[in-house]
Image (tube, rainbow, N blue to C red; front, side, top):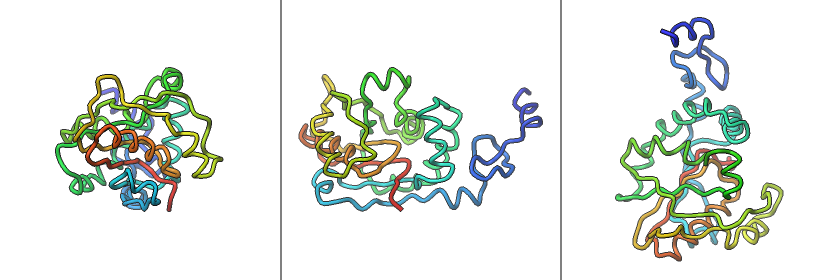
Length: 216
């Protein structure tokens, strides 16, 4: 009853264009068709040595960008339902991956995770992965904090991230097919370093899903 009253007082709106929608936390049909653009990402030669495929569910723009920022920097979990709809819309991409598959979130540094209170990659992907019977396991840990990377070149990012990840205690990656999940891909340096760590620990194949990519 409360949700009905709230919808009457504050009608649900598309988080991108503010058009009326039937269910709170969803995009309207035109925005969904435009923003939901699941696509394979081309990657540089050094990435191909460790990553067997990378896919994004949207481009990092408009409401997708705003919702991710609200989740990460303002701790607004109210952004999650709309982000989850992008995964559902692009879920056919799972048909391209082998099974069984273990999903691994890109880890945050412990200090950053304590401050934020959660890992955004887990918040975004965990319910959707569970619905498809894919376990999410913290096989990786971040061994140190790294400097902000957004103003660095690809080479500088790689240098800064080298050795920043390690296999978690008692984790076993040997012979497994692994799916890395993260919120955004910019240069791919973070995913590459995570995949390199997993491959060196014996992982058979490593793929990656990101909710959004900055590459158009």
